[in-house]
Image (tube, rainbow over all chains, first blue to last red; front, side, top):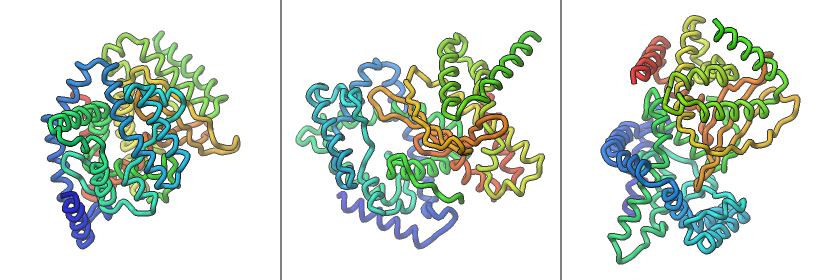
Length: 231
Length: 200
């Protein structure tokens, strides 16, 4: 199933390369705009109202615990990514975070490692590929998941495969509920940011796309990207 | 009239303090003062957008160089604009940016700031001042101010949030608008965006 998805992404990327048109980083603009509109509709009708209710009705303290719990689940993978990128000290610290937070922090409900001065890192397969020198490739808007690129889309496929929650076996209901809660929590954390983008953008699609590329480039370089030549 | 006089004194004080500040000290002072004012002001807390914008105009806007920001966002098209178009573009872009800034500030809820030490030589005239906004249980958000030294003190000419440059992010949008309908077309888009936001 996931190989089929990967093959589809590659086919889309190849189809895009064949017809360069307009913005070089976005040969599939027509298709992407369609998915972007679909995602906005889904967000307006379901994701945003649910996330807003979650933020307004669930106490902040509980939301913080939920955020910390999910965040902790991914520290082992984040550590592995840092190792794969040759950042052994960071990787080791991520595993230390997981060890501390899972035990003293009560299954990750409390992020005591951050209080101890061990900062949380942000890594995923897309960033590891980027560190290895693979370019982002053409822009891709994924249904439900939002802005991505050929490289990062493939990365997301792998991220999902290695996601501990999608590894919950034999208990479909629990898995679906957990994924739903995580999605809601993540969407709730982005409520302000998405509102700001809507207020700031002249063309929501273009603004989101350019912000995505800038953001990913920044993440690949861990916040210290080399200066880019002005276009 | 008294308000005006108070305002003038305020600006003079601001001006004198500004001359002594290094870029990072300026960012720290303005950030902390602004945040203190918005958390104490009853009207702003109750959601008064007009009051918040007044506050930003007084405290924050004097430290921004909007014509630089507009020129950078326009890229090559800036040189094609007449002086009158340049002025209008700067005015409209300024309204858009101030309003967005106000929205960002309105969402402020007691997050702590981590002011990063400035990595530059005292002789530098172009520096980046970094602030991290710490969030409970989440990754800190970095805000970087690109600043240039001018006779009137340090001025911000770009803001990067989480590595996303605001000025760079408008470049494609501006270029697209100019390509399809000229500089006046872009001006119309900006005006329409600002008027629509005013009505809300």
